[in-house]
Image (cartoon, rainbow, N blue to C red; front, side):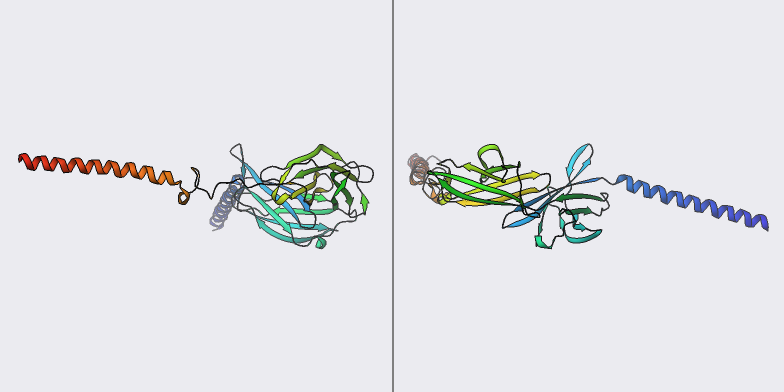
Length: 295
């Protein structure tokens, strides 16, 4: 009887070990199949408009970098051993998303006036979880248009908002908004002086809608302050003259604006050809009727 019990115990033990090892192997296999997600994020502040984070998710699948779309990414504000959820956003087909901060004043900084942001992906059946931390300090750009000796200038001042102090030796870019790529003005690098300011002359003859130029002063991807942009609407451009012939009857106009001669001459040729064919057929019938020839 004791031997039988021992055999049963050994059998149950072996079955348990087999089931545990099988489930462990299946778990490892599932984890091995998951792809790693890489999160990238940039902080962008547009003065007097909005603050947002540009978030992008990629993964290396089959030795190729692939955009990860339709995943939920959660954004947190970390401070003093605490964490506050700001919201969740879903990546688009390009693996990108724009998370807009509704109220910048609601964000809390640490003791060094640095904002700490955690971007987290909890993972799913296909991808493993991932996270990304970014830090930045609050900076402001004060930009305006001035005229001196009949020359127009864009002047800008860069300030550390947390300390209410000027930022020197920082590179600012001055550019005019365009549909595809901005038009850069002045030097490639406009370095702020000891007063945190720059002054860049604006060339004459730059075209703009109704003569207005949207001039941007940009602190681009700074290590401490991220990207900060100020926009100045300057009425100093050359008005754009609309030379479009879209509403006129030209070769490249829409169908309802087809040139008159293209409507008349092709139709005359078509009707003339059909008229000739009808005339020939009519004469054939006359000939066959006259000679009693059946066709």
